[in-house]
Image (cartoon, rainbow, N blue to C red; front, side, top):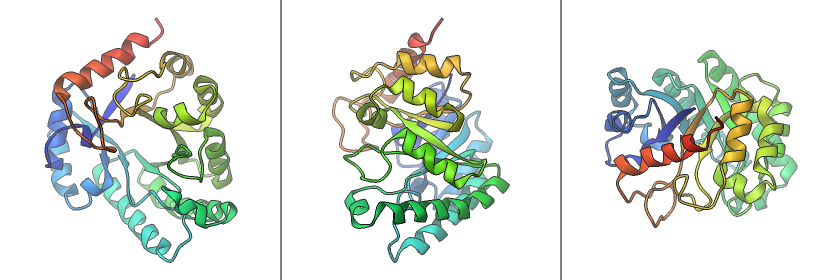
Length: 266
């Protein structure tokens, strides 16, 4: 089981210090949020060159509203193309994308947003493929967007784009709210699945909520899923949005990993 940690779960403001912190917690892979790389990617690249930790994936803006056909769309798409270039420089393998975040998705017809998202990913797919990068589409729960909530709907968009490096991703926090049977939904989506975000029912680390990961992990193991799964969650008893840090990362991150490993089928 290959597990990455997101940079925001590791303490401190210096993005270039995060690979060493990830390695100290026993991780071989790290995922960065794009805003933390945009102005420091050269320093991060140097840190990664001296680290056993590989940058696997990049999350966050400018990929969070690529389906929104507002006057700023062309600016976001240009920023996304720039992000592909930076990801290539860093050797990232996966870029996660979101069609729309927030109630802005209620302002535009769904078919128009779908068309905008498909066109955007088709533009990004070529440069990404040339750099060996997979673009993944992430569905969010209904409380965060009205656009694209289920794995099945996400697969339909990936099939419409029909590019080999455009896949889907699954986030357990959102799956818990939207999928009646998480294991069955993952099984149906497996041919298109390229990345996973791990979080419990309350967005805390796995084992800190009530989500039963065992059936889904069995599906992934039985299917020989070879992708990376990233901790995208919060540490501590309380949290105030993604990236809230509280607690002992050196103890809590390995503990959450051990919780998942104990659930793996023998």
